[in-house]
Length: 224
Ligand code: ADE
Image (tube, rainbow, N blue to C red; front, side, top):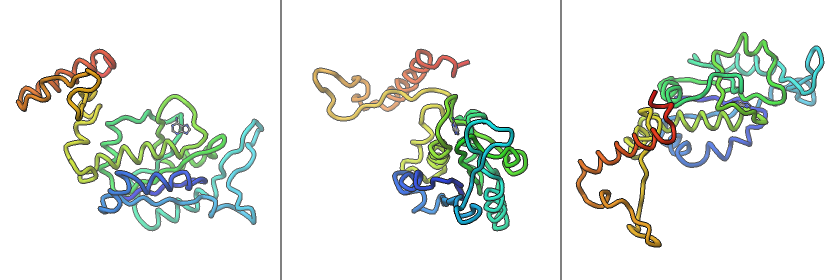
């Protein structure tokens, strides 16, 4: 899978794409992430990428021309399955959507800034808008990182223990059971005895029950 991220602040994502599971997935050629500095496509000596809003109002608007130029160039090189704009107005991002996107071949993710992008970008170039929650971030970069991370970790082979991503919270609409590691007792606080019993069937049943009980308690909406 290939993901092209368009941003005026690609430095914000540099560290992220060179660490952890996303880094390893790239080393294993499971995913290729390309960061595109939008400013390189800016106009004039100042490489302008934003301008005042027609009709007034506070905040600058990202211009269509640099975005159009870059997206057109990328589209000439390969076919894209989705061209995503990160925006608080978008569809709420879920595990289901991450799973779905992880099966695609080529994605573009456009990070917004300021007051957003010229609306013609959204009307004519974007195929999907994603929000990571009902709050406004200063830019789409952190949201794009969330989406790239969630997609990458569910691509088969990205996580060394391949069952691990499938047992994440939300994969079956249930929260994960609690996990413990050594020591079995700390400060008098004990690990549930069943986990030390060696009885795999009983342990699995316990985990399933814990998942269910935690979901019922903390996120009953997921059981509806
Ligand atoms: N850009 C700014 N806020 C955002 C959000 N909540 N989700 C996605 N992109 C955003």
